[in-house]
Length: 488
Image: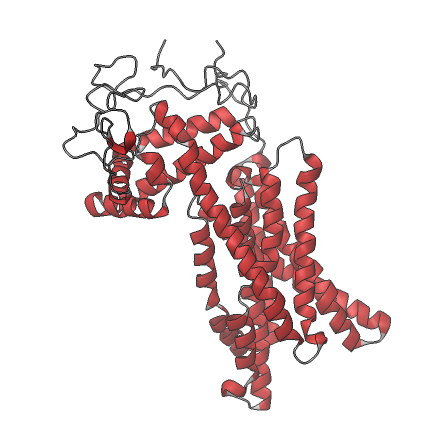
């Protein structure tokens, strides 16, 4: 019988540049320097007063956009450090690269063609989309390569790309609004007729989603590539590139809309931008709901193995039930318990998505070890999370259906005893934690010891059968028909 390879007793020490604190320190230093440089450049162009006005107006849409992307990521939330890096990269590094590259390219074109007006138009419609989308895509690429465990699908790509673009748009709006305020200071305009008001209306009110919309196309390309198997190397390389090219094309169309006539901007906005925004929003929400269905479909295998209770797949597959479980834990056990329930929900979702990737042959070499980590994390929090999830399942489950003559609740056969539970204990059991009237309390017991009062989960499902972590035929199947206790 194959076993998990033992941990090395004396693992080799990594080189100093491979240590986590060195990498984090270098990345933080790079972003901090970029932030200081971009701050000095924007302040030089707008002036101190213009910078402060632009900063105050540009920050308004940021919380709304970040909250929207965080809401989209609530099913399987990624770590905050990834989102913080993406926002900082977009606001500092990508903005700095864009300002330097766009200025250099526009001046070179103006000098080569002796046509400053044409150089500005060419720079806005061709150079800017290529440079800006490439600079923002770099953050998505870095998370995809170095935080691969947190980048598992389309939703992760949308969130990472959207947060990066939100940071970029924040810095760009400071620049545009600060310059508009400086223009109003020179002309004496104020109120709704001012350039600042018009710029604010176009960039903050009408199109705060413009930059996120462009870069989300790149994120979708990376997300689909993350779902591809390791054998499709060409597809994994071409999909992100295709998303990047689409983002550049949409960005160029948006920047060039002013050249399409008096109503060109409104035509592009109404006939192209808004429908694309609606379509991508629907795609993101649909993908989010599909992840919830995956949770409901994949976790019952761990119920059979004894790691989860029957109510948990239903509760974990509903955002309303999840929220209710956290509120229940906070009300009865405090904020720490609510955070533990939230972590439990996140780990369970990651476990379901991991199992789905393994079933489809997309798991990596660390499949078994990753599953062990997630199961251990769930087991450590079970005392706090299970009562809250059970309460949420009972509160959100549909009402019981009248029993058929000669059958149990929901049409279950009167004498039927589900696998793994003692007769009499499970009699009258209604799925997902809602007991039938008068039924005794539900108590799980060992399948091969019907009278045992203790409950011991099976070992990691399929671990003993696995010949290799990436072997699709060996893991996580065959099914977990016989839970085994710990020990020899």
